[in-house]
Amino acid sequence: MATVHNHYIRAALWCAKRQGFSEVELMKRIGLEAAQLESVEGRTHGDYMTRLVQVIWSELGDEFMGCTEHPCKSGAFAFMTRHVIQYDSLEAALEQGILFYNLFTNDIQMRLVQHGKRACIEIEFTQPSFDPDHYFQEFWMVIWHRFASWLINQKIPLIDTHFTYSKPYYHTELKYLFPCRHKFNQSVLKISFSKTFLTQSPVRTQHELSLFLKNSPVNLITIPGEELSYQRRIRSLLLHHEGKELKCPSFVLLAEFFNMSPQTLRRKLQQEGSSYSMLKDAVKCDLAIEKLVSQRLSVSEVANMLGYAEPRSFSRAFKGWTGVTPTDYMKLKHKT
Image 1 (cartoon, rainbow, N blue to C red):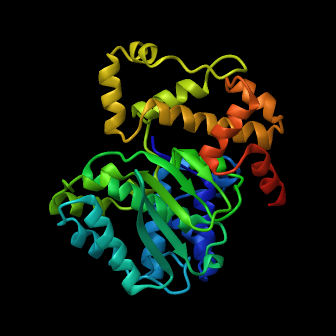
Image 2 (image 1 turned 180 degrees about the vertical axis):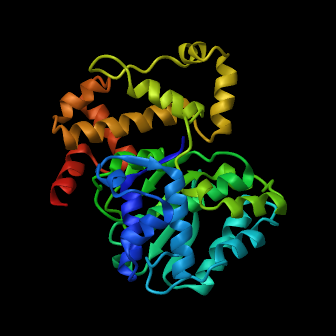
């Protein structure tokens, strides 16, 4: 059963309330009881979220849901998708979709940027104060990621996601929406992925697009069921190891665990735009940040927990992941 965190339902209701609509009336229209939202960390069936977004779209006549300075007329997203579906690569489709929105609104400006092996969709909301709960900013990133994945009929694994604000109380939910490394207090909203996906061709028909739009936003905003990608399963294995020290099995043992040859597992990871080395680095980086910032362990302790022979080796690796040393990273965090 697809579900959403209560934060997003409350945030969507507050968006409408700021535009003069009654939360109570909106909840009645979608059949949602107030008691269902009482739990701060609770979850609600995705059908309620879908109906709520559809009602707000209809009542406001604004696909940006009142979260920008100027409204976006209904039908803009559908028009964009019908235009980009005809292009022969995901890169061309994304560039055309981004150009479409950049031409008709200044409220959201976007860029498709390529750095080395990565492709990034960068997004700037010119008036983020209209979206104080960051609801639509996250929704917008989810839309572009999932639409791109749907277009090529392949789940695009994210490498990292940048947020322009501090880590929110519902940050664990972001791991479901954006299953990758997260960076907060950044200069721009950004999702990044392997640029190999840009060469993939859109494989959807106009008929499939019609069904996609008819069911929108259910296929964009709800969290899907169990993620079956190998990178997600490997990440889960590494993160849920027993003992205090991180243990990364050899690639041969990992392949045996999945009952396949190393060559087959390597190929499957490549198809997902990932590798065992990338996954280990991502897990080590996430654990290092968690231990240094949240648990306030020393650099030496974290180095030992991650299997480094000496702190200097860990510091070099950490700088490669984040651009700064562990010591400098903690200083920056303490200032924010």
